[in-house]
Length: 105
Length: 122
Image (cartoon, rainbow over all chains, first blue to last red):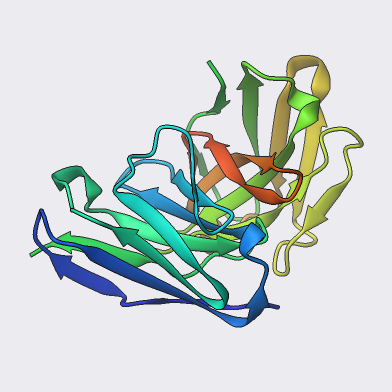
């Protein structure tokens, strides 16, 4: 079973700054199957990125994904107030990482 | 528009059963697999498994065998999650999520239900 480890657990940044979130897999995964989700309190998760680097419909271009093998990254180029949330990576449409909370500094 | 609408919150006693529904609209129900995801209070997302909406064949993740059953009623484009012999640790929000494919290879959950809170308490 592949385990996804996200880091950091919590990231404190200010609006306008750049956020870099990491997702590391316990073994190599196909980038085709790596996705990122955003979840705000009291809401369902929302798909941001699929195939490691493709933005889902309606997702702003300040969100980008990259990586391959065991190391993947979600980057938010310039944080907007609405971006502060919890972010999860997922592989193979099953296993999720434990999440990274992005909070306002 | 494409959406998944789940049934409302449930309060159950330990040992009881619960059935959560997930009604799809705006797309061909049998063209997409349906997944179930659990989120305990204050915790992360946990994949429970999926059901093939063409064949009705379910696949359960580790830890979700025995008391958990996925089913369908394709005549009303609805997926169901039934949990029997409820325990306090089943208290969670349960989400259904549509699995989409792009380029015949990339997949992810692109449409989510709003979630159903199941509380198990005596």
